[in-house]
Image 1 (spheres, rainbow over the protein chains, first blue to last red):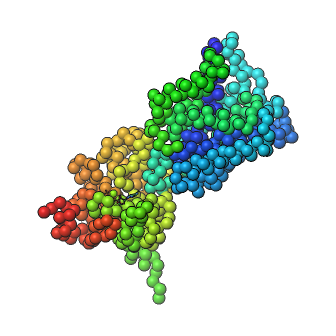
Image 2 (cartoon, protein in one colour):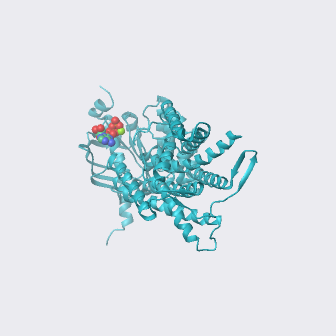
Image 3 (cartoon, protein in one colour):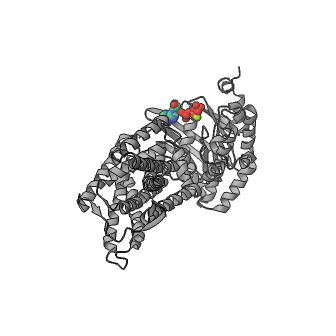
Length: 301
Length: 249
Ligand SMILES: Nc1ncnc2c1ncn2[C@@H]1O[C@H](COP(=O)(O)OP(=O)(O)OP(=O)(O)O)[C@@H](O)[C@H]1O
Ligand SMILES: [Mg+2]
């Protein structure tokens, strides 16, 4: 039972990694560039949640878990727009400026977002108001308990990933996203406005990342301005593990990292979980340098 | 009395390229190209490796930089327009090397070819049926990934995908490259059929003999310049063309 319990916990955390990893992988797909600011956009989702809960605290929803719904929608929209803005202002002008300039620009945006959060919200740990996080849970078997918070987080992550998969697999713009990832020049010859597709990616990736920030903050209860680096870095690693540029890969990589980390923590020791998780990661990458579902070697980082 | 502008446009060639210059870094790949394609023609563009044939097509469709000159299509200046606007204007390009989306299915590749039609389901379905009639093989393989097709099938998909936008002008870059002789014949027959259905064609070919037999007129490109041009039949008989491009003694 303990194993199943650990697995459920691992999948929950893994689904958060996956949601954030999707943003890294989608941007890499269309631009062959790592959006180092993505982790901090994700962190801003958590902080915006804080502000929104304070504002919503003055409404009829005060103290109710239902506050999460409007907050999540608002975070999705605001962080998506922030992502769009970052691309327009910091990346697009450098599109043809070689490899190094966009990386530096991305790191610059990352530090800017982080410093901004620290200056506005302070350097100390912040906690969401009580009453929002769902309490209670379901006992499935003796020693096997799934908290209501866990169910909510998993359901939200699953819903978002299912929606994204449908979009990417079934719609015209989603298919164009895949086409641009494969061959941007051929995509232009098809009449695809590649800049437009890049904008869509910079809306969706950060939008999902922002909601993930809110969910992570709810799940753990507290966070600080380093959330983007610590958690974001792991999500980035999950994206590479799954094969950067590959959308199902990001989901798989996130889940795997979450499960390995949780099992290592539960069966060996919490202090050693990162050592074990990353040793496993390095092992996987040595065996498969392109990541689990990646087809080609990441040529440009 | 001023002439009717529509009539004036109708008298001009569908595509008119004047003084086209393309530079890659320090390499001047096109040094001022002039060429014209009349509505309803097949025009061939031949020349040695590196002469600038592909660059000419790429500059017309907006994926290679054109630093000087004019590219008039149906009276509209294309130079400086983004590639997707050029497709929307009615120019489709089946590029060198086919560039199929290998991890998209055949149907999805075709769907991307019709991207400029937006979500006009009726028009897309109609074009798809037309492409499937032209290449029944593609209909059989519609759910297969593009990358799993044979070379000949990929070339069919490349051309079919370009036709999905219902172009007025089709740019074909080496459609017969790397294909077995029987398939080469099939592809040339198909080009004839596409043309018979009203599409104007500008064809780049290494296979100069076949291209000159198919085309009405042709241009010979040498290191970024038009060296010769004229009716294809005349070029086919031209001593110099025969020696240099047709491998005849
Ligand atoms: N992207 C590029 N960057 C730099 N130089 C290029 C590029 N593309 C083409 N060139 C150069 O421009 C010239 C013309 O090339 P182009 O591909 O147009 O020739 P081509 O006539 O199509 O040749 P082929 O028959 O081999 O296809 C060549 O000297 C080539 O090396
Ligand atoms: Mg060429």
